[in-house]
Length: 228
Image (cartoon, rainbow, N blue to C red; front, side, top):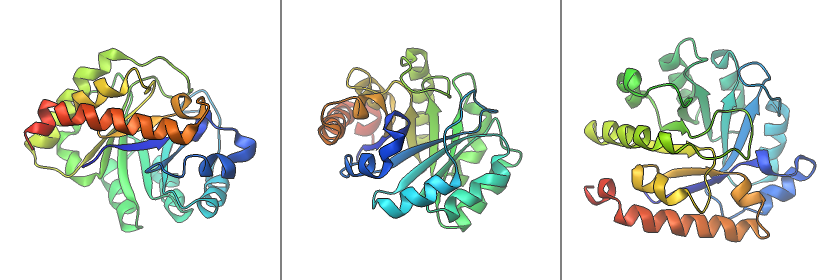
């Protein structure tokens, strides 16, 4: 699969979300960070804003739920118009059931892991998912520095995906920029969330194109991609 770029509106101007979505119209997804001030110490937006944003853009919404009780709330984000819904395994009561419900409602089901959460205990769950998100910062705030210690975890996750022959996307989120995206792609990631690197640029659309070009070049040389 070709690398995909998902700009995070956490770094956008919340007073101009429709315009900010248009500014990255060439992106593959629009990453929407939902925070409840319980699972993470920050509060952002919820279902009504997602509904409005879905009407304002043709770019599919990639909703990342950093919230407690995702088993209760995640299906509502599908109904609000999200094309992909990510829940945190640390917060989910029944992750397999939740992933199946998200899929049944018509969205892609994705599961996220905080930096300290290992992937190996969830190996048997991977076939139930469309995407796995490896956090490369502690969730809760944008603009954090990339955690290089996550690169081995990305590699191990890519090995698990390939071992089982899964069509599972591997997303990274946190500190992804021109200086880190190639390392992520080389390790095995193929979906890249970028906030500050896109919306902090003079031309967000050009930033998306440049990041995609970097990811494609790194993927072309990566050992995991050459084996496919």
